[in-house]
Each structure stands twice: as structure tokens, then as C-alpha cells.
Image (tube, rainbow, N blue to C red; front, side, top):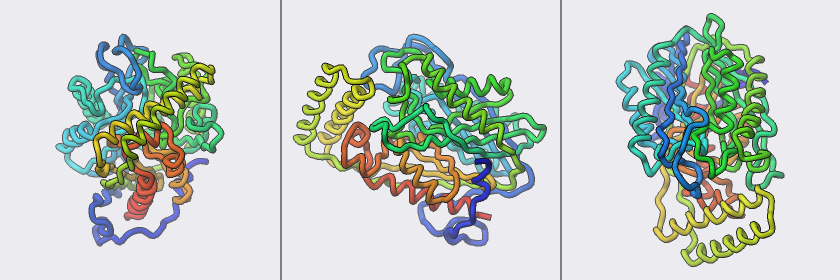
Length: 454
């Protein structure tokens, strides 16, 4: 399905004034858009691999610090600019990116003339450094922030006249629902292709939802996991003429738990290869076209906090979960089922800590949207369950890029059904059962704004 997003029907949107500034919903940033004749685009990458000896992120039960580097971690930037208006997509090989880093990066690029919207995403690799999200590590924060800003400026410096296209496909066999592999999962794959007018590909932005958890907690080598393997293969195929970006999607309940054959670097290469081949197939069918307008908008949403049972209730549930984990290990259950039992204990331990803290507060989340001609996308700052992305695309009636882990990290956003049945994601979540619906409704409103601004 190629450039289906460009067939986007013009749906009724909110009221705009004569300057095309959104006026219908107080608290939202106005739609920022530009309409001129020539898109300028540039991309760049900066190595942000930290020194060894630092703690690693992704697994609470990991023992020891990083001892080496299997493959480099990167900050990659793609800038799309028309006139004084630009959108920047930045992708980093990290579990998540703290809002403090997002603010520092925005402050650093605010000195440029014109208007810049940055969508700052983490690939969510579980083989990166700790400290880019709370609790922050000064060394990691400085390395990541400097790397992002450098990549952005390098992309700005190499801008050329460009065209853009999008394509859609599937990457079967990489991920599955990690709570229940029999549950429906649509492995939709989106590709944004940016070509210079001269014909060479500048960038491929890949959008695919699946936890990068091939490598286990015992791994102490920095790595991009399967997304790192995928983009490396894509760039090799394109003779390094393009920068390949991986943006994770609504992967809150999607992982390689039931698809991986091993927890190894060889397996991350295998799964990354499946994704890379699917991407290259889509890439070859995209027909980039001139871009006449880009638009973006953001909104801060206060998500309701997760309801927390009493300390006594959680303690009792935790004791039952620990007994179940012990029995599961004794029975030699499959690695997938054993992992579910293990993470259930971890989630209840987090819930118990919250219960002991008392009443929780709403969680601030930044939701964003963008349009490049008729190619549309949203930005979600958390581990949103996959069903919400499916719902969004169905209600929008066109393909939509869903950039998860973007502009902050609010943790898991489970479905109401997951809250009812329990499990790691629901007991770990800081937000409540209605948070996902609020994110979807806000995203649809923002999509209307960016798609209909003229």
C-alpha cells in the first residue's frame, strides 16, 4: 500500500482564525505549518555510545555494569524544512528519554531563526545505558544531549532540495503479543522515504512496534538489539547513502518473547534481517513526490493516575505471584511463560511501592501530530498498548505513523482489559484505565488540525 496517507480525506476540524491558528482547544499549541515551493531535507548520525563501566537500562534484575560494545549506539536526526518552518525527527538508541533532555534540546535549537518542532524518540533498546531517564546520570545526559544537538545541526548543514513518500507493509515473525501470543496483532510497518531531487535517498524512517528485548538481562554489551541490526543492514544495502531511522510504535504489549529462538546477538541479527528485508521491499515501491507543506502541533495532556489497591491487598497478591513464579520454574515451563511469571512479580513490587507512597497525581504527557503533505503521524510519550494504534488508524481511515517513546516517557499505557486481568504492564503503570482513550482522542483532534490547516 503506497502513499495511502496521501489519499487522506479532509475531515471536519476545529475552528481556525484567519491566520490558521488553532483556537478551539485552550492549552494546545497552535498548529505550526508552512506552505512554500521547495522542501529542504538533511540527515545525520552521531555516535552516543557511552564509556563502559556505567549501569545499563532495561532490566531491573540486571547485575553488573557495561563491560563492552557489541554495536554502536546512535543519535540520528532528520530535518524537513520549508521556508522558516521545520520538523526534526530524532531517534536515539536508548530505553527512554527524560523530559529534561527534551527541554535541553529544544532550548539549544530555539536560537535558530524560524520555527522548529522536534519529535525526539527512543528506540527502546534494552541494551543501552541507564541515566537518560530518571534517575538521571550526568555523564549520560551530557553525552546524549550533545549528540542530539550535534546531529541536528549536522542535518541542517547538509540540507538539499528533496521529495518525500511513504509506504506500508508488514514484518511478520518479529513480534507478538507478549501477554498472550494468540491475541491479534497487526505487524504494520511504515516507511517514510526522503530523496534528494538528484535522486539519492537521504533517509528512511522506519516505524514498527515491538520491544527490542532479544538480548537478555545477562548481556553487558551496549547494542541497538534487533532495530540496530535492521538499520545497519538497510544502510549497507543503500551503500550508506542514506541514514536509516528506527522509530518504535505502540509496543507496550508487543515483544519478541514468543518469536525469538534464542536470546543472543545472532538472534537479534536474524530478527533485524526480517525487518530490514520488509523495509527494503516497501522502500522499492515508494514514489517520493514534491512536498508543499509541513504542519505540526502538540498538546500537554494530564493522564489520570493508576488506581492503587491497599498495601495489604498488594502484599497478598505479591506473595501469590512469588509462589507461582517458584512453581513455574520448578515445572520447567517455557521461557515465555517463565518470563511472564517473573515480570508479574516485578510489576507487583512496583505497585506495592506506589501503594506505600499514598495517593498518586495525574501524569503529564505530551502528545503530538505532524503532516507532510498528506502523510500523517502522531507522537506518544509512552509504552502504549498496540490496540490503541489499531483503533487510531481505523478511526482516521488512513495509515498513520505512530511514534512511541517520543518526547518523554510516561511508562505503560495498558488497555482497560489489561487492567482488569492484571499482569506486569497493568501493575507497573503510572496511569489509569482511561489514559489510552484520552491519548487516542487527543491524537485524532491534533491530526484533524495538522491535516486541515491550509
